[in-house]
Length: 186
Image (tube, helix red, strand yellow):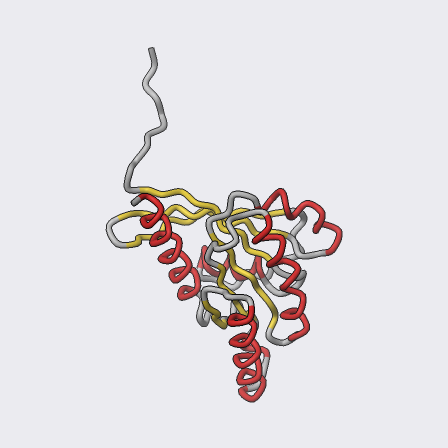
């Protein structure tokens, strides 16, 4: 009998995180920056892209499969099936097109309907490099109001192009997922 090539490590928790939001907000470019630390302009996602990344949380490893879902209307019908089984989510909007923030409640509703309604969800405003400081203040105020109103786990701003603010939202979400998993095991 042959030896198995697969093994289970009790210190590795594998989870799924959905990355969602309107088309053109930079979800794929953001994940490519997170993965490679390089700016790689992306073309529109067709369906879904994946990124798997391990992060250390305390004394364990969290293996996160990021599901980067296309934001165009023609793909929305598939979204409920793709987002099922998520342990967390990132809702992305474009700070240079603030109307994209107002499109997020419908994404949020689907995520909460097809998962535990209390999964950790981070709001992420991308393209902060493309707006003035005055508009950044307005974006922060709007994000703060949105995060409170929809009981999100926090909000962050980043620039996939410049590389600013990329690590923090992913780390924060990883910690929240890990803590939630530990509470569930007790």
